[in-house]
Amino acid sequence: MASLKASNFVVSSSSSSKQIRAAISLPKLPSVRFSAPKLRQPTIQSEQLNSKDGLINTIPIQNNVHSTPLVQESSSISMATFQLYAILEAIADRVEMHNNIGEQRDNWNTLLLNSINMITLTAATMAGVAGATGVGAGVSVTGLNLASSVMFSAATGMLVLMNKIQPSQLVEEQRNATRLFKQLQSQIKTLLAVGSPCQDDVNDAMEKVLALDKAYPLPLLGVMLDKFPASLEPAVWWPTKQSPDSNKALNNNNGWTRELEMEMREVVEVIKIKDSEDYERLGNKALNMNKVLATSGPLLTGIAALGSAFMVSSNGPWAATVAAVAGALASAVNTFEHGGQVGMVFEMYRNNAGFFKLMQESIKSTLDECDVEKRENGELFEMKVALQLGRSLSELRDVAKKSSYSRIEGSPMDEFASKLF
Image (cartoon, rainbow, N blue to C red; front, side):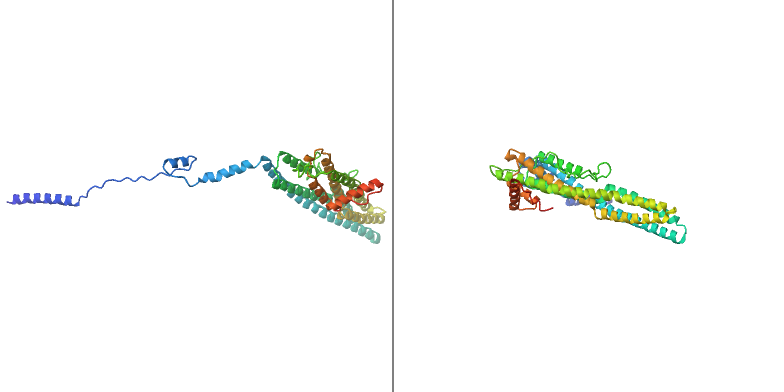
């Protein structure tokens, strides 16, 4: 009986467990796979791939947006334009260099002038005191004699060096170089703005830069301009062979007429016989004056040094007097030469003479060109000449008429071509 109950319990428990198992078992759901589309890298063939997938490519590719205009823009700019921009960078650097060196040499002029004058006057004062003390009290003034002699000798050496390099003239050279480089810079910028530059323009700009470098050198040793030439020679800062400017013709004769050519030839004659000769004459006067002053200053300080050296002899009072007077005169001469900047005046006349020489050569080279189409436009050329001379067009024509009448009548021309200088 007991075994029957036990078997019944086992059977009932196994059947109940099957029921529970059937009750908690869930039906299997069908598996669904989701496929995410792969992102594609933007390439040149992205538009073709999108069209194959049934998509329309309406968004431009970023790489093409930035690369295509740059390629087109760089291809549209000529190599001559790039070269002119490179020349502009070099010119800007030269402007800065000449400006800085000009300021430095201006400081040289001021510092050397003040230092030499103080040394000379101090030595002259010591020589005078030594002479007066030795005569009155009979005491030894050997220290004052030696000190004044050494100071006069130092002033002589410094003055020889200063007169050799002429700092005021060096400053004027750097000023002119800075102005001319800025002028060339503006010409190239105008060419880039309104014209289409070619390789000839690049070569012309390079030649002008090199000509300016030769006319106004930066270093002092070896290539410094002669400060005391035999006579004034006009400054030359342009290439020896100039190609006439070629502008587009405005009419059949490119703005040139027979009257305009005669007018330009008369202007050249007036510049030659009046302006150029006058500045060469004034420049030679400044040159001769500078030569005398440059020789007198060291000579006087040398005499003062010898006088102070002979103050220990029996002729001490006379030697002291000579030393003091020569030192004072040397200080006055040095102040007049370098304080008055006589070298700068000579350089200014030399540069002005070069300006008029450039105008003559420019007008002659333009008139020598037989083909008027290759010349610069006549009306534009006349306006440029008038502006460079500081005159209006009517005044320029009046000067040409006066020159023609004076040559026919044999009377001298009483008017200069330029009103600026």
